Amino acid sequence: MRASNPLTSVNTRWLTLALGAALLTSLLATGSYAFPIGKATFKDDAPFSGCWVSTPLTSSDGCLTVAAWADANATVGANLYQWWWIFGVDSGTGNGALLDGSEAMTLQFDKGVGASTIFFLYTGGNGGATNNLARINISGFLSDPKAYATTANAPRVSNLAYASGTLSFDYLSDGGSDYGQLLFANPNAGGGQRLKITGAVSPNGDATGYGAALFSASWQETAAQPMVLPVNVRLNYANSFSTPDGAVTVRGYSDRNATVAANFGTDFDQCFGVYGGANNGAIDTDETVTVQFASGVGLSRLDGVYASGQVTISGFLSDPGFMDLGGGSFGVTYSAGVLGFYPSDGGHHVYFFTNRTASAGQTLRINVDPGTGYSFPIAGIGYANVHTLLAADIPSNVAATQTTPDGLLTVSGYSDTPGTVPANLYENVDWFGVAGGNNEAIDGTESLNLQFSGGAGLSSLGTRYSSGGVVISGFTSDPGFTDPSGTATGVTYSGGALTYTFNQYRAPEVVVKFTNPAASAGQTLSLHTDGNAGSQLALTEIGYGAAPTTISIEKVGNNVILTWPAGTLQQSSSVNGTYNDLPSATSPYTNTISGPQQFFRVKVQ
Image (cartoon, rainbow, N blue to C red):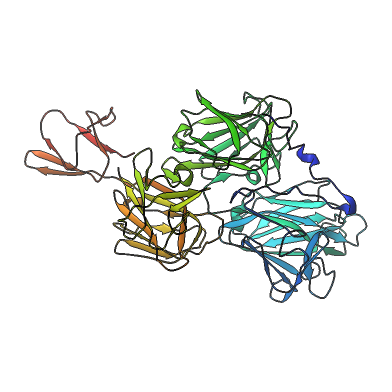
């Protein structure tokens, strides 16, 4: 039942080979679960491998487009040139396989993804006697990417600085025998941006010339369901990390009881754990990572890779609803707040948790079997508000209707618009749609009804592999649509219907927001496409939140009439006292003016 650990010491997995290059372990992926979501190793991957072309080249997943320029302003086109293990610019002057002189290279990221890593090779200053430093600039960031460097054989990157959209750093000449490994703790800073790379001689060295070339680049989702990723926690930098939204804090410990704080360790942007022990990028048998969730937020997914031995997660309030849709585990058990399972092999696997209330507000502790050589490298920790329906929550092709455990949202599939002919909900990996046509999406005449109750209304909608016109009808007012990725176009609201065009037919997930849940509170919305050929929606999440609730008070004769839109009326004899539910009270509620003073409020789940 137990396999030897395929993750050896992180510090020794990147070794210098003949010709002074290094071998990077290939990424394993299942479905859309690449970690990072995309990567290009230019010497190996089409269309970059062996290229010598003047036209821009786009990665196979469509998320990265690379172009070469003869000038630093990126206005005069030049050839992209991949030679040996390096990728550079051939403008007709200088070294054709390097960026040098006034040349530039641009990396254009698709909406919904941003740079996670950029690895340099054959880069640095030349002509100096003692300190051959190049100054590399990467411009186009939306904000500070929080760049940092890790070491393969020797420190190469220094003097990292960010200002006004541009990251600059010095690069010590590697002579083609080492990597400059630049990582970004904030991939969102490059989301949908065109990053421009230029170089010069550094003022901090004695070089008389410079050259730079790329080896690889990777990218992460920027407008998706939130996750804690390896690039966020950084290598040997700190023993705790809190997400920008304050929802999750992860901490590292060098003991199994989580009492001795220890810095995080990472294996680049692939996985993380605790620094020290046998594996810097993993939780070893005598180490712990804890995950503390804010109230109302719980564990939605856990990504693992290179794992072996039994993994235990303790601290749940109840059974967390462990789901392994990819067959990446065996021996799953749950008892008294502790979940246990064995990863089936060293591949990258994603485990979902359908009962987020089991971990909401809790601190979970992740350990691995104390057997020799076992470890659990974390490739990502996903979390979600408990008022969220995720694709993994839906049994695929079983029923046409799914109701959330709190009863606030019922989703129903139909083969027609408006919905009169029920059709099963169909789930695949982490997206879903309506059975028929493209089973994994809403397309053609299909529609999805979202029925809200208890004062809840639509707050978010996640999609991937989606394109064409989107129509959501049934609002009572403008729902306050926002799209952080900037993908949506033609957004309009009129007469209860929101329409927009959404062309994100690639793998990255994009979650759009609705800032006015009151516009759909208690309503039934109809969600469908414009019906045109090629239009489809593959949903990943439906978020819902409580709309603001007010109580109206009206005196009629000797009575007081209370009116409220939704929720449970509560009563107390003191404004700061204990409020008790009045489950039989419905709006409008009539009270006779008699007896002692009473106070009322409405409870909305």
